[in-house]
Length: 310
Length: 291
Image (cartoon, each protein chain N blue to C red):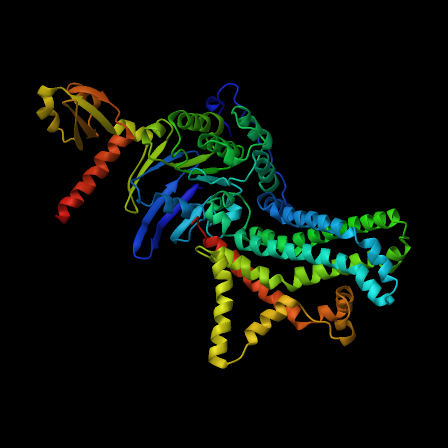
């Protein structure tokens, strides 16, 4: 096929035809997700930074730990357990909260940023479909951020446990009570379950909506994401004097509440563990939310086909 | 099979008609220059060909419908649409990794070979490179893709003359062979004249001129006429006349070379001169008509 006369001496052009490499759909998705992590480094940097700052705060708290432990022997065992768990729950909550905030800003920028910096023209010159692109961007808040925040939270909690043990040993107290009263493995398992179900699946329609806005917004995606719900709430209130929309948003943000009243009074870990998989996966709100997320994503895929640099 | 085939290609933005029923056929192995004034519809036509914009009419690129099969089409086609569309956060090494990961026809070794001839470092981010280096990088990535069709929309805009010359030299020497097709638009017409095999003028959404470079060279001749022979030369019906340093230069369509040689110095006109002759006249006529 090649005509050697066109080739300058010493040019690197090879005359043999190289067979095209086999690239699967999952392979493309893998690289598309890696691309997201290259562009948005805050996906892992932000939770890591928050974990580091939290650990610094925990170091200060450790000064009082021996005194706390001595005092704790005088209260009843249930309260004692709450006291021990509290910093670990706080660490997990802070890291998960950070991941949620990162997820919001990430999805809002994911399909808007490429139009703003015109790089959409480069991405569209490659054989990656709009579906793969949108799915890769949805994978980040659905799977990557939850797994990442779980890993960071568990490592943080483990470091906290080691630091506590070291301080207790240094002050001549037994670490036995600390290790006996908390089950690290149990705590991690509940955390993983909570992160994957609530932060991944339950929040899916939120991320779907933000991706849709990101694909559509001519400018200021943040405004377009938050203004419509606000207006809907206001219009519903004035027209029908009801607040169903607001209640729906609250339900979506807080997650499905456990039905057993005993669990509601207890600490966060017990509350979360009370929500069994059977109960969670039979909540209509979960499947309704996933269906809505699918509609938002389909619309985002279709919109991206029409999108040009802004 | 033609590489690009369009019939009645049309695209309107509201009431503005950007592409007004273009019929186009680009065969395999050609280098087509699409020349036109700003707002003529070049970019819109190319965007339709690349599946970046919806259109009316019939269009097949490498046998595919670009609008519905863009990702499939991009396995065999590639484009540089405008300079500076590489994301600024991207590292050179990441660009190579990503293309190798998603593009079945990307040859990483080849891209590395092209990059080795430049001063671009593998660890640099695009934002750290000069405009010329970004163009070099983009070209290196694109040339390492074994594509059947390459579309370049103003690929050298804003680059200095050294980079521009190098850009087209590498394209011709290291990339082009008779099995590939290249479509290029540019305002620096004189720089691509020797590169093209075909030229097409587009104005107000329509193709106003279409010919191969062989035909161009045999049909159009420019004569710097000796002052005493101007009247005789005008009798041969030049399509355009201009004055340079007091000498008259006439442009002829389909007049024998020997006949013109007697009137003065004969040479092949530049595409730019013909463009001015054809479109300059046309817009002049339009202005006259509206007056």
